[in-house]
Structure formats: C-alpha cells, structure tokens
Length: 455
Image (cartoon, rainbow, N blue to C red; front, side, top):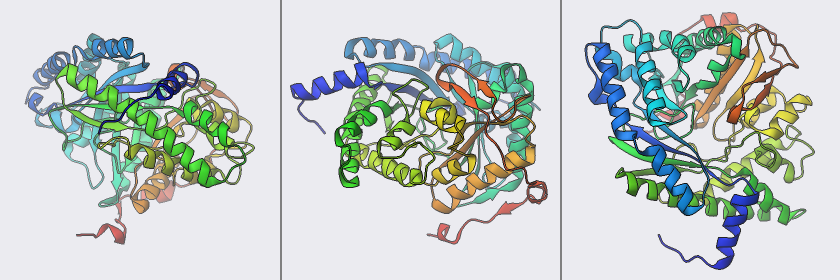
C-alpha cells in the first residue's frame, strides 16, 4: 500500500520524534535454532553461538544506519530464538544453563541488548526437556546479563497447567533470591504467559515460535507521548472524537514502524514479519500510558473509569494500526508495566492504583501484570495464585495475558525496587495476605473453556 506524504505529514512526524518520544522501540530478529540441536549440549551451544553471530552480525549496524538516514530513533535491536527446551531436548544434559550462557555471549558479540527464547511451552504438560529448562531458569537468569526467559503455562485451547503454575511461583522466588543483591533483577527478565504469541518482538517475553520461518524481522513501535499529545487537542469532546483521534495517531505511528521494518528486512536480506504497534511506555515524563488515560478525564490512573478508558485506548490503537499495515502482529495494543511508566509509578505510590485494579485493567489491555514489585516475603504459592488469576483472564477471553512479578528480597510495601534503564523503578505493592497454598497444591489442569471447542 502506498500513499503520498505532504509537508504537514512530515512536520507532524518531526514533532512526534522531537517532542513526543516517538520511536521504534525494537527491531527484533527472530531466528530458528532447530538445526542447532545435538546430542552433545556443548556442540549444541557452539552451534547456537555460531548461528546467532552469523545471522545477526549486521543487525545493530543496520539499525543504526536506518536511524541516521531516516532520522527515526531506534532504541533497541534484539534477537528472539526458538524455545530452548525444544532445541536442547535431544541432549543428555541435566541443565540448560550452558545454552543460556551461549546465547548471552552471542548477544554481547553482536551488540544486542536482549535475547529472548530461554523458554518452554507447557500449557498442556511438560516434557522432560521442559522440566530441565524450568529448573535451569533461576541460575540462567542470575548468571547472564542479556538472556530473557518465558513460560507459556496456559491457553484457551488447552486450559491452564496448574503444575507449571506452581513451578513458576517457585522459579520466580528462586530467581529473586539468586539476584537479591540487585533487588531481584533477574525476575524482570522472566515472563509467564497464557496464550503466548510466536512473533512478539518485545522483551522479556519474545521467543521465535515453532510456526515461524527460518529467520524474520519483527518491529515493535511505541508512542504513548504522541497519543497523549494528540488528546490535548480534543479536551472535553466526546469519546467518539477521542477514539477517532487515537486511531489516526496509531495509523501514523504504525506507518513509520512498517517503513523501518521493510527497510531493515531489505538491507539484511531477511523476510519482513510483523509490526507490533503496542504503546510501550518508559519512565520518561511524557511517555506514559497512564497519562493518556488521565487525559480522558480521570483524576489519576486507578480511579473508577480507568478500565473503560484503557479498553477504548487498546481497541482504537488496534483499529488504527491494522489500517496502516497488512502484517500487524505480536501483542499490539497498550502495555501497563508499572515500573516502566511514570504515571503508573505515581499512581501506585499514592495508593490510587492497587494490584486488584491492575488485574481488572489486564482484562482489556494487551498483556497483563507487568513489572510489578511485591514484598520479598510473598510466598511462592501466592505468586502462583496471582499467575493463575491472570492466566484465567487470558484463557476465558481468548487473549494473551502475562505476569512479570518481582518479589523484591528484603523489601516491603512502600519501598522502591531500583532496576534502572527502560525498566525504571517499581514501588512495592501490597498483596492480599490470605493464603492460596491449598489451592495451588491441588495441581493438575484447569480445563479449557467450552468456547475453545470450535472445530
């Protein structure tokens, strides 16, 4: 689809970049590692390192070239790989930490800031390889810098694997303990999904799904500041006008993302996959999803009406983006990561935004309970129960939901977890003190909903 640019379009784009934090958040190369499998894990790791370096060697350089030539900020270049549980399963190893270390070395060699795919898909059950990977996650995340991990523990078609949910709570606690000196930083690189997508370019949950091609370029755009600025022009007007304004803005943002994606694809000689048009906030003032919701008339994010405002925003972003690109994918909508959003941080600190309200908001947004710090003494069972609640929302509503929880060692409600960079700072939020231990100990599977039977 082609269209003509006029001078006002160009000036608007310049303003978006210069004043409103518009950027391409990530160019992510998805890479299949199935040809790296080997009965000897050390050989497998050598193949993983070699393939990543060979295929992604020019990724960062290409991103920087496009940034210079087009004047579009490109914040990150990243890599997602096939779920390592599928790749290392043919080996006789009892730990997959060496695979994570090979991924980390390759990521440093090619210069990307994160590499995702230390992952297992266990929505219906776990293979022996899946179990080894899950046991390896805490050590893998504590001994590497750039590796990200994920588990898919449920889906609308399969139900929820409650054994995996229970294990996820223990994994998160162990990861926090092993990275206690950094406030449990390792947990910021671990996402627990229901209905995970195979083409997500955003970290920490990205992996290159088994249904994906050999190699592909996926781009994640952003632009909460652009949407917030656009809404300043329609103060006091109806929600019809608000929705239309967001749609038009999302169209422009997605167009920019597709331009970058196709250019990166051409220069790298790799097929173009999708544009993920998610509004991904940062801790910077003016780059907040919470402030967009407040621009619709809420005193603060978390007030009654917040869920309705987020539903409108998420839907309008999708509608605008889908008109701009024939290949929209990933998660595509609005993210609400508490530590990464200046407005969310302020609302949580003031007590106006609770964990329960965030859970309600996840029913209508693109992901879930993201980058949330909880007291360090929160039990593994309680963490698992939070994950189960979030997975149930995804399973019943046929949408992706996820948890990225940080039980910060030694911290309690009112303290702050300092993570830094795009991850920001997370105020420690209160958790319901009632026990869920017996609920989690039941194990087994929560069956898939009746509407999953669509064949």
